Amino acid sequence: MTVLVFGHSGQVATELRRLAAQRTPPVPVVALGRARADLMEPGACAAAIRAHAPCAVINAAAYTGVDRAEAEAPQAIRLNAEAPAVMARACAARDIPFVHISTDYVFDGAGHAPFAPGDPTAPLGVYGRSKRAGEVAVQEIMDTARKTGAGPGRYAILRSSWVFSAHGANFVKTMLRLSEQRDHIRVVADQIGGPTPARAIAAACLDIAGHLARDPSAAGLYHFSGTPEVSWAGFARAIFAAAGRQVTVEDIPSAAYPTPAARPLNSRLDCSRTTQVFGLSRPEWRRDLTPLLAELDLPTGALT
Ligand SMILES: NC(=O)C1=CN([C@@H]2O[C@H](COP(=O)(O)OP(=O)(O)OC[C@H]3O[C@@H](n4cnc5c(N)ncnc54)[C@H](OP(=O)(O)O)[C@@H]3O)[C@@H](O)[C@H]2O)C=CC1
Ligand SMILES: Cc1cn([C@H]2C[C@H](O)[C@@H](COP(=O)(O)OP(=O)(O)O[C@H]3O[C@@H](C)C(=O)[C@@H](O)[C@H]3O)O2)c(=O)[nH]c1=O
Ligand SMILES: [Mg+2]
Image (cartoon, rainbow, N blue to C red):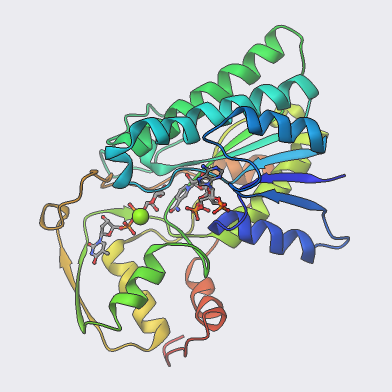
């Protein structure tokens, strides 16, 4: 039976398609980009779930423009909150496992301790608020299904952070592009988080969907981010080292890099529950840099 993925050309959706094809036996996947299911019309999601009758649904589609969202709140809310709610309702009614991806940006980033899934949220911007609204909607719908006996409410919300891959827009590709134009780049050093390969998120989503199909008691909110934690500046240095680029990275505070949306200073996620329940260990992001450069057809440096 088919796994239905919302999103087609995004970072995680692309890796889901690739990974599913590589599994033995291959996992049949239908991935719907916006041309085939426009999340701005959430009804399209329900129609797609009805039409494909999948064995699992993975939502890898979202409004991910953090700064742009500040000026486009209605669109961000439609994509990140209303569409996932419609998906959750359709899945709950048919007892289809539903995996939804969320973000570290639901937190305000106070303190230095890793955030656990149950910690209070306090998003700093529209993107984070819209993603949090999506989490709340999915949880309420699934909890109601369970309480009313309508179904077991098989769902997982997987919060990740700082996603990168060879596809789509991400910090790694931005840094590589900038290094073609400059030999000195200023990067914030006071925001700390776990860069996460999209490939690892895709693998986690497939594993979690399978687990939920067997065991609905695993339903809930989970964290999954790469290790070790690093600042954006430290991440930039690692990218340039892997690519053998002679670029100096200057550490700057967030205040020296003003953006429409504020970012959390502390994006550390406590992923221990994900390891306990699903046996998934945190991906070591450094390992993915060299294969990513190869995928982009770029030379690699001597340091990797
Ligand atoms: N990027 C990051 O750093 C992080 C991302 N996340 C979360 O991970 C998930 C995946 O993110 P990522 O892979 O980076 O996303 P991308 O920004 O790479 O891709 C966005 C995806 O959303 C789809 N999409 C956008 N608008 C619409 C629309 N109107 N209708 C239907 N589909 C639409 C795109 O469709 P199409 O295929 O047609 O282009 C694409 O597949 C999201 O939930 C995101 O919030 C969490 C933490 C960090
Ligand atoms: C390009 C650039 C960025 N920065 C800073 C800005 C910002 O604080 C940080 C990262 O910039 P980006 O715009 O790539 O990152 P951003 O879009 O905020 O990335 C976020 O995307 C969403 C979707 C998520 O869910 C988050 O987990 C996170 O990955 O680096 C610099 O300091 N110097 C630079 O030259
Ligand atoms: Mg961005």
